[in-house]
Length: 46
Length: 320
Image (cartoon, rainbow over all chains, first blue to last red; front, side):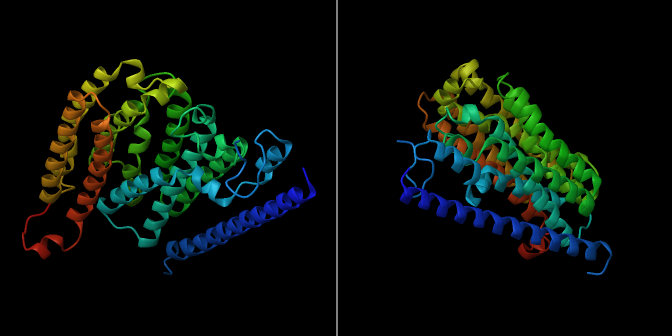
């Protein structure tokens, strides 16, 4: 593999890793918010 | 030559780089594709319908969480199905573009993804909604992955007849989310999808017969032949009206649903009859498309019939 291809590959890997991390972070934040709101509803505070 | 990705990377699938990319290169969209979004949409719709028509009250947010759990569980089941079926998926033209056969997602990643989502969906359903709905949800995932995908699919032509139960549970889960129980009316909704599944899938299997034969999946047309399958499809569609109208006898639906159901069942029987009488694949394709409309409209009508103020709006004064 040429150096140019290797660089392109590394850049693509980094891009996808970042996208996956952002998606995971979003899912975790959503889950925390969901648990918080469910707790409020269950406790009758909504 | 087969490329590793649908992007600018020009790498052979067999190269070391390709193997490296599979381990670290799955995109978010590939994981989304593992969830079988199109299948999920029908599951969510029927689950929501069960929740909507069930007697009793549920907080709107808890109802939304229940539907979300059903959606996530359906997606998780889809991911685990793709993990197990990756060998036959790569052979069939309908499924060879899925993320695992394409090498976009590693099989173990798909399995881990499916198991995680399944665990979360059941846990949240139990904690936020109720244990009855969570138990049904867990059983549905088990039934689809273990009973249907692993056990029945490759062993018997009755695979989708029995395995179809997993697709029929969502309205029961939605119902249980509100009532915390299983009632006759929810069983009627289950039976509607259960009896609808064989003619729906066999219509697809008729025109995808070469695919299933190549993959060695014993679908009914592969094992029993085209004519026998077509006769069985007609038998199922002739039985369906009794089940489809059960929500009317049980007081869950009114005359709007009943009238539309009679028309839809007449249409379904007509399609099955045309499939039986035709040698080409036009009518099986039409029947497959009609079957989707059939189920969608049944659940839509069920909800419209129960919509507050609908009967008053039309000034008809008749309701279930």
